Amino acid sequence: MDERCAPGRPRGAAGRYEPGGPEIPWPGHPQPGRRPPGDPVPGRPPSPWNPGVPGPGPLPPAQVWVDPPDRLSERLLEQRIVLASGYFDDAAATRLSAQLLTLDAEGSSPVRLELQNLRAELPAVLTLMGVLDTLRAEVEAYAGGETGGPALGVLASCPRRLAYPNASFTLSEPALRFSGTLTAVTAREEQVRRMTDSLFYRLAEATGRDAEEIRADARARRVLTVAQAIGYGLIHERAGRAGR
Image 1 (cartoon, rainbow, N blue to C red):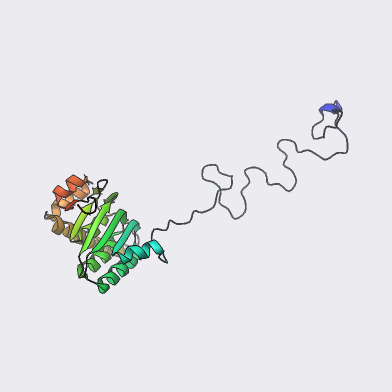
Image 2: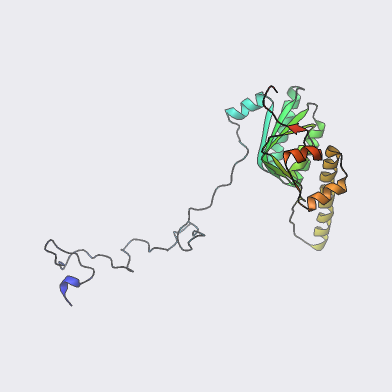
């Protein structure tokens, strides 16, 4: 074979491959000490889009509730404004309840509760509903984005309810999953049924409608605009500019 076409040999200044020079990796033969393409890196999961290629690693969970509170949160609390957004679970319910109870102990002037794209677990909603029932201060709820499912129970528990023009409301049944023995599952189903009834009864009380009508709308996943929510009784009025 012609020496000029020999693979893996460096070409000299004269255009010839010089014997004894450093070995050049040939396609399919990685350099020593380098990881072949597609070989996973130890301790890192492969990418789901390209199996075998190292992925960026597990994503950290999104933080909705600021802890410790920053200066903006402190200023909002000074103005008696509380923000609830994103996914609402037991931990979020505990923190929001603490904020509301603190403001209620400091004075009886109204508290503004901002609900932004709130998605909630049913047990967490029932916990906050109980706290809202005991407050002396009137709570004004301002709903923005999409509010639906159990999160409507938080809205319905506020004496005064307003909505931003972009808001929408979805009546839907709570989605819960649980497993265990037949006895445990049966007991859990009965408990969930009572919790769901409490949610629909609260919505019926707030809207002046029958609980079975609301249950039927929830099974049909009825979506309401702001104007429809006002006619439904879920919202009192559309939020306007300050001073109007």
